[in-house]
Image 1 (cartoon, rainbow, N blue to C red):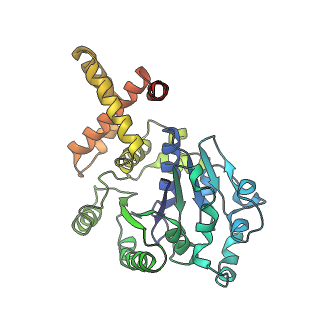
Image 2 (cartoon, rainbow, N blue to C red):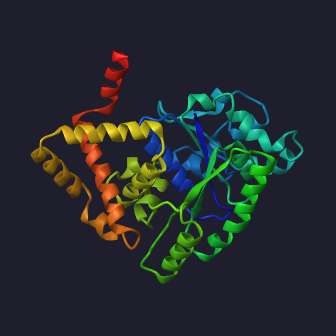
Length: 331
């Protein structure tokens, strides 16, 4: 079933767009069919993928107004990664859209005919709880709060959670709160450590273990209009988003089968080869990344990261897709 996931917090500068872009990019690189939806009139997601949002002839707004077809609006960045763009024109139309029948379901109605074409639809929400954000929650199967460890984003949690309960009760009974992702973190500061403790206390089972550190390469990637995995796949930013998305995929059936396949392949190798692979995996975890995994479950985070690096090596030796095709042929 297609998962439609909103990344949301009604505060700007918390990393929502960066998270949506890089999650979409990583999922696409793993073979998932992904649609990234820019629901923010600022058009930052559109720009982060390298498009000039203000020069576009058609955007998401045209679909809301039923002026054109989905295929005329969607931007095909690759075979498995598509973008629904946005720009400032939609900001002027938000109030007129309030008078539209079923105004809370505009996005749901746009996505419903095409959702089965994708494995994941990721929505970058605007920094408020207006009509567009309500549309995102009404259309989603899940949502993730993206929080930077600062005072004002923390103040935004309660009203967002109240909005979630309202939407779930009145508009979308199946909406699930997937969890909290901490972004733009620097746990060397006392304030960040205090925010971490508060989130651990209030969301003991909903706080992602992975977190996104403050990292200049993430800003550079956005300035160049590319995801971090295209800009510098060996950077700390790529490392962090890789860990987050792998955790995000933990319950995905396809990912579970892939991880089991890698484990079987690894265990089938002679002990000497297993040790050599693990040595390469440890080298791939640069000393920079290891030293910056500060405070939060260092050992567990490193073990998860090491497993991901090991699986990358196994994939090069025994490609999963080739194996899956053989298994399908046998059936």
